[in-house]
Length: 86
Image (cartoon, rainbow, N blue to C red; front, side, top):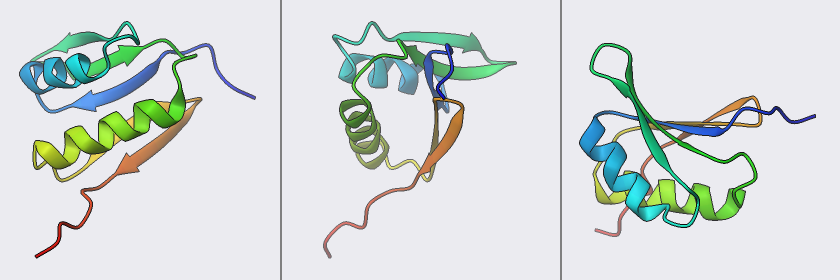
């Protein structure tokens, strides 16, 4: 049973959140938060899950982040960088 909450992706900064929001064009992405509370990107809960997770994974890899948490349908999904070929 899903939740009515939007999909939320934790971001380490407003700038990196903005970069992710650009990747999620078409999903009505918004950067929310503050330096004190932390930053996240919110998109509609009915956004295509596979597309969202793929965009987040590519963002995480491209920005060399160590871990990102996606809050989706009441579940926290932690993504880590993919191994790059040597």
